[in-house]
Image (cartoon, rainbow, N blue to C red; front, side, top):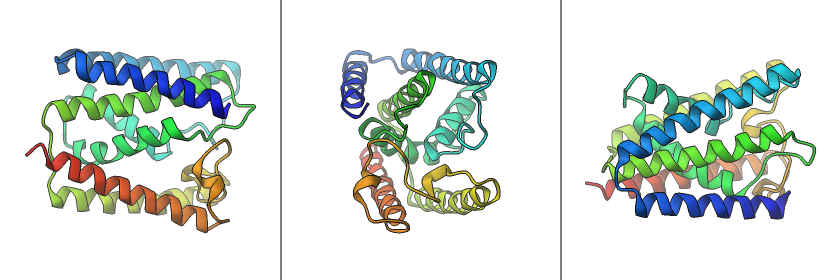
Length: 212
């Protein structure tokens, strides 16, 4: 699936490029995002539950990208931007990571692949919307979001130990074709992924500062 992953990601990136350059109305983009999120959540969870394939050890929205996606959806539903700094910092890097890496094994379900692409597409679309709306971020919010992610990381580590899951890939490498396969064994790959995440956070922070 590795080669196909880049083909699909490339096509979706082309769609995002067109949305960014051709659609100037962020209200329209926000509606597209809202219905895309609803479709993604309903189709993913309904398919897994109805087929009996749902597994709380792998399918809960605990990975950072899926937590961010859920936060975006709740922000839209409740018309609140209180989480925007945290969501913005997660969204761009998370979306790009999902397009350039796959954490699904070869025997993953079709609905899992669909969920992977739609989720990371939604993350980048959200970032495009807030960037077009000239959203910016303060250093305080940047620090707050970084600390919040650190606390989430330790909470997820504890959860993984309790239920023997692998959210955030704290226990072992993710399956599929991804950068972690090129990094040293645990905890080397985990430290590498954290370092990349911190760099992504800082890059996104500097990018949003330009909106000032």
